[in-house]
Length: 396
Ligand SMILES: Cc1ncc(COP(=O)(O)O)c(C=O)c1O
View 1 (spheres, rainbow, N blue to C red):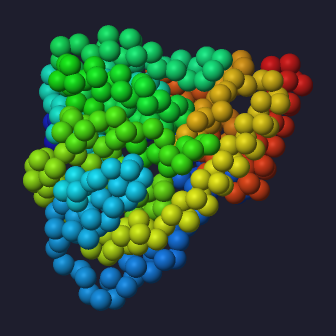
View 2: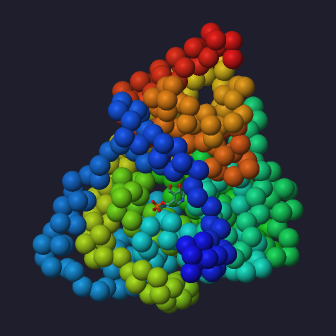
C-alpha cells in the first residue's frame, strides 16, 4: 500500500483533524535568536520548587506502580477542599477525577456527551483544540460568533440558544475565555443553566482560567449558580495556576454518580496519572496559593503594559481582557493575520498566534500571551509599537 493509500484507509474524523494554526507560526519562528515568544498559552516561570520536590520525593520512595484510575484519594480530597474554599460550599472527592491534562478532560467531557450525529455548540473565537476534539468524536461543532464592541467581547445569549437545534447535546463554555479574556457574568451563567435545564442539554464548563480574573479573587463559575445534580462537566488543569504546562495533569469535575463511568473511560485511554505527578499536584493545591497570587499579579501588570502601549498607537482595536492571560487584538488594515503572524516573526522579532487559529470568530485578530515578566513584555510591546510606526511611516 502506498503512504497515501494508508492515510486514505484511516477513519476520516482522525485523518481530517485540523492542524493547529498556532503551531504553524511557532514552527516558523522556533529557535530565532532574540525572538520574544508570546504565541503559546503559558508563562515564563518554571514550576515552583516545592511542587517539583514533591514529585522527586515520590519517585525516590519508589512510587512507580499502577494506581487508581480516577486519581489518588488524597488528591481528590485535596481538590474537594480547594473547591470548598474557593466556592464556599461543600464538595466530595468523588466529584473530581484526575486526568492526564485539561486536554484529556475536554476529550472525556465530549466522549461522555456527544458522538456521531450530535452537535456541540461553541462560542467563537475558541481555543482550537475544543472544536477539533468535537470533530474527532464524529460530532459537529456549531460555532456562535462573539463580537468585539465598545464595551468588550460579547456573547449574544439569544444567538447561543438559537444555535441549539434538536441535535445539540452540549454547550461548551470557556470562561474566562482563551483567546478573548471574555468572562461570563453570574447572570449569564444562570441564564445558560436555565436554558440547558429546560432543554436537557449538557454544559461543558471550561473554567481553567478562573483564578486569572482581574480585580477579583476569581471569575464567576457555574458552581455559583448550579447544583451538584445539574448536567455540568467541569474541565480543569494544573497547567496554568501552578505553572505546570509540561507535566500533563488536570481533572474533570462532575456529579459524583458519573465517577465510575469516568474512571472506566480513563482506564481505556491513559489508565491513570503517574503517582509522582499526583503527589506534586497535592503539593500544588495545598501549598500553592502564594504562587497563584504572584502569577496573577504578574499577569495583571503584563496586561497593563501591553494594553497601554498598544492603545497609545491608535492603530489597534482591543478591549482590556477581564480574565485569562491573553490579549486578542486587531491591527487596522491587516486582515490576513495568518501571514501577519509570520511577518511579525521576521519584522518585529515577536511571536504572536494568528486569530485564524481560533475559528471563524478570530479572523483578523492576533493573540498575545502576557503571562510573562514586565521586562520582556515591555520590550515586546516596544517592538510591536516600533513596527506599527514604521508601517505608518511607509504609508501602509
Ligand atoms: C481553554 C483551555 N482549555 C484547556 C486547556 C488545556 O490545558 P492543558 O492540556 O495544558 O492542561 C487550555 C490550554 O491552553 C486552554 O486554553
